[in-house]
Length: 267
Image (cartoon, one colour):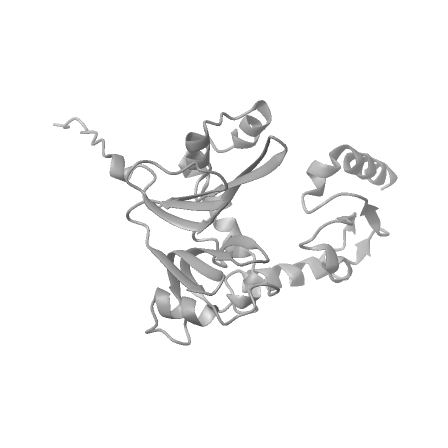
């Protein structure tokens, strides 16, 4: 005989191990940890999420979660952060400065030059943000879940946001999207590097016509156009989409659709 499911309501389980970084005085739920980053940045974190904070003069590193150094496996969060404090965070590339480190973490770096937040290379602990203008001043709020940001700021999805969420009506449909960052390697030995090399070799064998629109404002894959074009046997002449960024289909969707239609009609 089936027993009825007992629903346990525990406030401590709501947004467990999540965090919220605000550029105003908005904070997380009651009982959450508080950590001041600067006069303009305030961190709130669930009691079960570990926070490690180190400082050197005007520069601070605040870690959310746990970090691993394969070259020093016995080092804990605090020891690894103390080593990271020696890096040039005012000018250095965060991905390169932490590229050899594992774990599941988000790191907040604050100094006189900038305040940045980024996550581990595989995206095991993610960072989302919401940006808005209040009295002419830009405010940015970051968090580990979109739902957490929306709840704390009282946000409701608009029609366009609802359309993006339509293919993912529940968590069970979001697995592929959450795993995707792990498929983007930043080193030859990172997860996904092997699969990418296999895919590149397969693309070289295809005897199909290829149209490759390329955005001129893409900060991520912008420099790779020549390398990607070299993979295809029958690639169309270069097609530059001016003013478009990494998601060029959103920045210039109608323009690209016109190019694709003309190209298909010609082939």
